[in-house]
Amino acid sequence: MTPPSSFAETLRQKLRFHVGRWLASRPGLMASLGWPITIVDQFGTPGDTILTALICQVLKTHYPRLRVHCRTPNPVLLQEDPNIEMLNGPETWVEVNFHYLDLIGSKDGVRNLLEPTLGRLGVYTYQYQSRVFLTEDELSWAREKLSQVLAEKPLVTINVQSREQIKVWSLDRWCELVRRISKCATVVQLGGTDEPQFAEVVRLAGALSMRQSMAILAQASVHVGPVSFLMHAANGLDVPSVIIFGGRETPSNSGYDGNINLYSKMSCSPCWLHDSRGDRCPHSLACMEAITVEEVEQGILKLLSRRLERKTQSL
Image 1 (cartoon, rainbow, N blue to C red):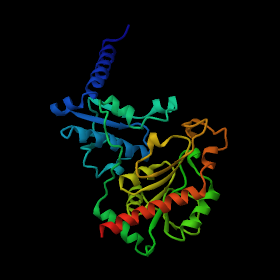
Image 2 (image 1 turned 45 degrees about the vertical axis):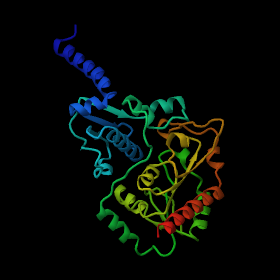
Image 3 (image 1 turned 180 degrees about the horizontal axis):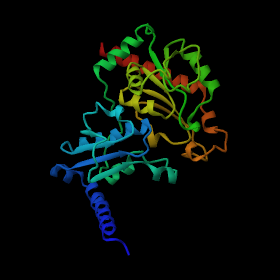
């Protein structure tokens, strides 16, 4: 027989689940009552933290009076976000996990990463546009940091590595791309200590915090890399990017308008393979091999030209 205290706790948890789910789909009601809602960054990677913030931002756009809390392993990334009223605070009655497990499980190549979570919140129209908030001190630090290397050339940031090896373009192609682009741009390398060495770049990889990396990224004309934290951060800073998608996921899933998203449609894509699950590509990363140096280079030059045009028009 279940002890009375255990029975009461079980009943409380069930009641909380059902009432919480009902309220979560009615954020307008919660806003009118002044009740907070917590969005939980379930996956907890830096890129997913930026997307969790976007969920919060979409909610505030639709319901300005809604009190939005956020729980994330990376609170430092969101510490300046005015849309979030509390980071990693006490438990609230209504908590919604941001994840896209159903897209991964069904190998969905059509729906946006935010769609399942926002659907549970009753939000069906939104702008998929990240927002990153930096202080003026952080931006001034970045300008000073780059003052010795910036000349007349535009600044292009790159990062090579990813948590998932299926997102990593081959090193020989990166070497050739860097050799070509360094002739017309100052190339700054961001990312972690596992980034490969290039002779023609200003290497800041492994030397910066995530916020410092974003401050440097904010100075760039173009960013280049895989689907990653820096892709989401660049979009949040209005820095256009050339993103080497390959075929693991599609631009419809996570690609941003204004970027050049290089996707390889294969019979096996999108595969949503994860190294953390022990997944290995049985096709020797054919989707990444299908993307050429010329495609990436032309994408960079196109975005640089577009940026220069806008700059000229604003003068």
